[in-house]
Length: 98
Image (cartoon, rainbow, N blue to C red; front, side, top):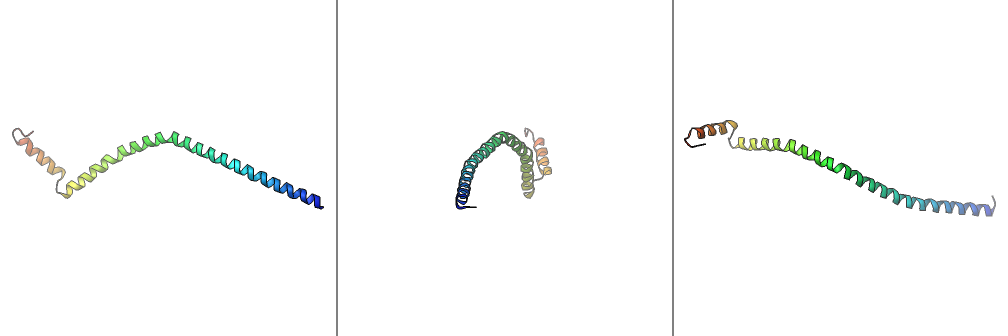
């Protein structure tokens, strides 16, 4: 390979590298923008469903847990289901009680 061919090859490599770098920069931004747009669209599509499912889960799980905690606290103070039944029965026996 002579000197002019080597220079031509070197210029071709440099030009190819520059073109590849420029393409990478432009395509990188385009890909990033498309990923962001797609992610936002997915969130917009999925968010209402997730919100509904979360609300259903809260409605299903929170009241029983509150009831359980309330029962535990009342039991610690000696107030049981039988105690409240007894109090209700006593109040029903008092004239004008209920």
